[in-house]
Structures are given as C-alpha cells and as structure tokens.
Image 1 (tube, protein in one colour):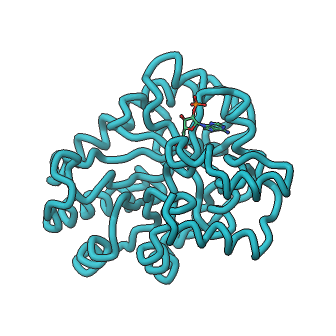
Image 2: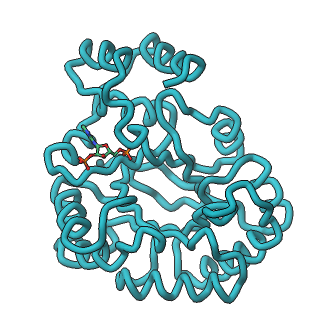
Length: 270
Ligand code: A2P
C-alpha cells in the first residue's frame, strides 16, 4: 500500500487505489473510505458521476492523515465535451471534495454513456485544453483519461501538448486490453485497472481458484496481484472491511508459469 508507481511527470501514485464506483453517497462511502484509509490505503478513486465526492472528501478530512499523504483522483463527467462545462465540472468536484487541489483529474470517457462509441474527438480536445490549464495552474497535480482506446489517445495527443499521464480502463484476468495496454506502456502512460475482479464475476472462477490455492491466497488476491505484475494499477472496491483489507494484502509473487496460465484465460474468455 505504500509502494508507488511514478507518473511520467514524476508524481508518485500509490500502487493500489481504493475504488468507489457504485458505492452510494453518505455513510456507505464515508465508512468504506475511512476503513480503507485506516487499513493503509493512501489512494482513493472517485468521480463526479459517482455522486459520492462529498463523502469521500469528508472521510479523508476526518482520517487524521495529512492531505499530502493521500492521493485523490476524480473525473470530469463523460457527458461534458465543452470548455465551460469542463471548468464548471472541475469547480463542482473540488468544492464537493473540499480537499484543495486534486492529485489526478481524468476525462471519464471519450463519449457520453448514452452514446458509447460516438465521435467526440473535437470535444475531447477542447476539454483537454482546459485540463492543461488546470494542470499548469496547479489545481490538479496530474491529468489523464479513462476508457480511451489507442485511436482516442492518438487523436487527442496529436492536437494537444501535455500527454495524458494515466489511462484508466476496465482491466481484469480474462480482459487485459493488450493493444491499449501496450500502447500506453510504450508512451509512458500509466494504466489503471477498474473492476479488477470483474465486479465480482471472477470470484467463482475455478482456474484462478486453483492458482490461489497454491499460494494460500484468495481468488481476489491473485486477481489483484496479476494486475500489479503487469504494471497495471488496480482499483479494487469493497464495502466489507475484511475484504478491503484482503484486497490490499497482495505482497506475494505469482510465478511466471501462473502468470502465463492467467494470460491464457484471455483467449478462453471468462
Ligand atoms: P462488497 O462490496 O460487498 O464487499 P470490482 O472491484 O471488480 O468492481 O468488484 C467489486 C465487487 O466484488 C463488489 O461486489 C465487492 O463486494 C466484491 N468484492 C470485493 N472484494 C472482494 C473480496 N476480497 N472477496 C469477495 N468479494 C469481493
């Protein structure tokens, strides 16, 4: 939990983040984030769209941990594709969090959720220019994107000057996005993986369970460890204190053979 990746701009980011997608605002989010921080997590991932930024911020403020020792990510809603909207969204997020500058600000997706795959290249470039201003002003320590493909990244970076430092994508055993991952690693863009347990679907997988048995670890722990060995930053989430702790207890090494066996599940599907 104290190990870090370095972003291309030199900012360090704790290797395991606590994901808060689908955790309802209010006590559920507050208690989960407090538990995560008490357990030792120092990286919390939220978004305007999750509706829980105020509870995340309150939990961080009440934690007793220095602000600079916790890494906070939030995201500009996928629907926002214009500069004024992006500025407004950032102000709303930072006001709700009430934690000062954020550590990472992401474009939540290249397209609105009700029009997945639609072409918003021009809008993303406009929004990114606002991100570059926020970054230059120190309002956010780093900037990135989420759910971007190689084509999305290429069109954005061809027209702007600051390379995204992060691309947060759906990434788990059996769904390893090889093309996007290789591209990002080649460009020095850190890949963060959301839904590292496939929102819970991996937990019953027999192949992973067989590997987990060899190490005396759980399916969740092997699944999360797999991301780390692929240089992907996992963002597991749970509202259950014992699982929050379990998901961070991944200081073991999967053998090359077992990593290859997990790789093979990509072709087979999960
Ligand atoms: P819960 O919040 O009730 O603990 P993902 O991170 O891929 O989105 O998966 C999150 C889902 O997996 C949640 O439903 C969460 O349930 C469950 N989960 C998270 N960690 C574990 C774990 N260590 N063991 C079993 N289920 C887990």
